[in-house]
Image 1: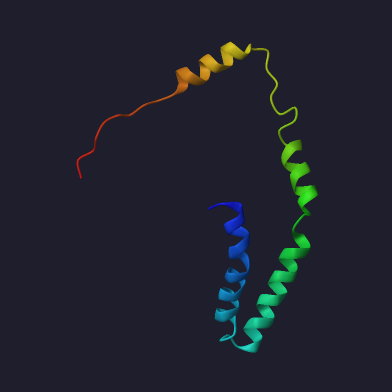
Image 2 (image 1 turned 90 degrees about the vertical axis):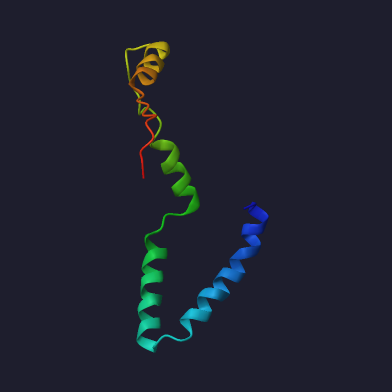
Length: 87
């Protein structure tokens, strides 16, 4: 799905969820609101999230082996099972 169509779908998705929610009891709605507020409060901002994603890869790989040796080990570790199982 293209980004533009995803952006267009967001209001429709929210309306769909609201359609389900309007039939819930008041206590159930309050519980959902509390859960959503907790989720939003715990969720890092987009900037924090993107920085955390980049940081977890920085300096994560240390090895004395050359690039060719590492690539060769990865290729040699591959297992292929081409057997067709009878159903």
